[in-house]
Length: 486
Image 1 (cartoon, rainbow, N blue to C red):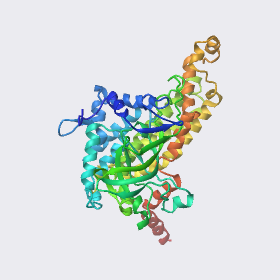
Image 2 (cartoon, rainbow, N blue to C red):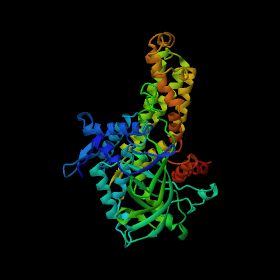
Image 3 (cartoon, rainbow, N blue to C red):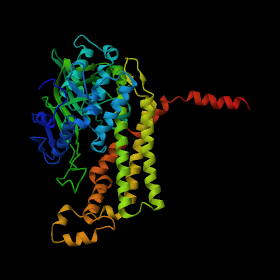
Image 4 (cartoon, helix red, strand yellow):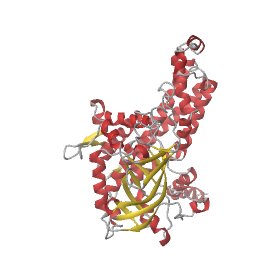
């Protein structure tokens, strides 16, 4: 039912069964919900959406709006510090459902849309005769909120050379650009990457990210819009799946949380004017995420997810140490303590950001940005180290992992005998190490590590931006003050 608020998992899955053009392994997908290597992620997300309706979670992850419609809290506009904390609790709850291993849950993009829709003064700067961008974004926010839409996004233009990529210029042969304006909207052509959860989403946001040079040649590349995945001319080319059809025992994570990444091709796609939010102004596009504070709300959601993920990594390591009797070993405790410290660092930064929430220029409350920026610069370094420590703890046992089928064949007796531990039977031991293998060795696990390294962008750029925005002058002044006393 339209505009009814939160959906069920069945409603979400039914919405994916449309004419979307998704390609994987050389063939077009007929039904993403049933596609091998793709349907498992859709089923997991459907299960998460069902949890919104359960009494145990409903008041944590949803709220009732002024009309009495129950919506996801990620859509709620924060008007106090308490609201910011409440949103954080919902973000964290969602993340615990996958232990941070399903990175692109709907609350991430919901946070972005909420921010853009409630910074009207920013979008109003770009309104043209063809469209009222503020009204467009407000309508889109309501449509997403009231219909519990699942969004993906794509930010990066492909480039034909490194020099071009770093110059703020793009090639119309490959990069997404406007080829024509019509009374109905803009016609766009080219490619964008990388749409995580793209095949399993209802809509795609195509927003600016990479800095554009503020000259006339970049006007065709300056826009922000959103359209349904099933829009004619929109195609997705997926990477190979990391869900290989194994059981939950054999692949505890990859069988559940394959969210899929795709390159998006726009083949002369018509974007209606009512779905355009920015257009033709590179400078405005460059400022969009910062000036609307969308980046802060998104970083808040991300920090909550990284906390859940770090805690899970601690849990897996402690479970291995306990099972093997190494939980009294000083070296083992030292390695796991390093990961515990990482988890507590993320928790402290998140707490600091929420407790110092303040009102922004649009009358909304936002977490303090500094601690969130610290978190999103640190975690890309933390997570690969967590994986390395898990590899050191697991060592060759990460490879000594027979499959579930080996417990019911002619070798079952040998497996039961030779894979047991003093405090754990062989089946539980193998299950635990197969989980660790899925994190630290498998293709799914390596994709997670790569994903974390580049989540918000190349580390050197992230560090440079953090350096430029940091309050250095007050620190330098203290040094100069001391030296002046000599």
